[in-house]
Image (tube, rainbow over all chains, first blue to last red; front, top):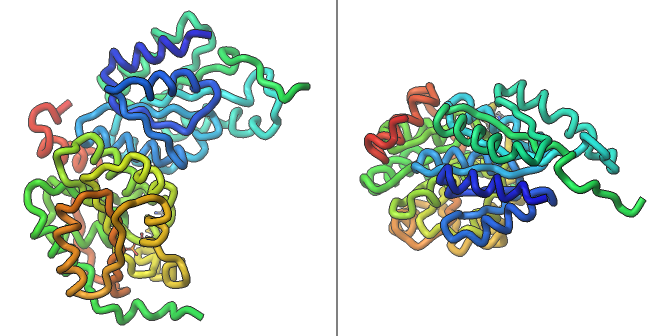
Length: 169
Length: 203
Ligand SMILES: Cc1ncc(C[n+]2csc(CCOP(=O)(O)OP(=O)(O)O)c2C)c(N)n1
């Protein structure tokens, strides 16, 4: 389970300076690596939608940033994504999926299943990665498409990449 | 009981305050407005490329200003927004207080109304106190401004003080003529970036 290092490597190669997040267990190691990196500002958020607006501000100021969140957080972002589309701000979001595969918590199901359709409804380009061997290339691609291609995109990290979570049952 | 019509007779007029801040701010000041009246106020004060006026994204003005302030620590960033926009994104005050950008000033033009949508009373017309919420969120500099003398006293702090700061400016609940900036968001973004970053702002 070292694929997070490939995301970190892609963030560094793309000169990402702000990493904003509401944590998910699936992102925990990546977040720790970003916190330890003096060249990256890591920002814990109260709500994911703040993160979208922050990334718009970062871009206005000439910096690149990314948003890390779990699939439930996508639901908190929808209206703010309108800002990115209207102004054609670049957006790169890394979304750890729940409610997809071996999900033990039914409360994660609705937003997990809704993540892709609502992002697509807001014209966010969506890719999914489910093979650790592809994380590096797909992370690079989502960052390239945002900051070179000037698009809004999200990389969904399939639940298959995460350890199966249980509360003991 | 609270008096939810008291804002009808607050002495400060929002357009005067926006003009005072804009005129005193100079070239170094980057301005982000919220949707609604603060957009029209700062457009009236001097529509220019150093203002990024929001036409939507309710709840977003403060975090947008935070991302900008962190990206450009050598510039003063002023967020000017409404009480309802602030209330929608209250959590972002806690986020600001974690990052502590000393170049960020947030001015809340508090007319105690959802002005744009028909002047319905917001929570600040009742018991909510945004300056107190900001202080409790960990913002080191906070204050409430109620008249011109208090505004004049606070102005240097607004423009040059060590932030982050949140000033609630109690302004009269008044419906004023629209003064509109360009509404194409991509244009507003690009003109701001080019003014700030020069050729590197062009993609
Ligand atoms: C998410 C969202 N909800 C509701 C609206 C409708 N709306 C537009 S402006 C506004 C009120 C803004 O009030 P405030 O921020 O206090 O600014 P004022 O107009 O009073 O200066 C509302 C509710 C919206 N644009 N977006």
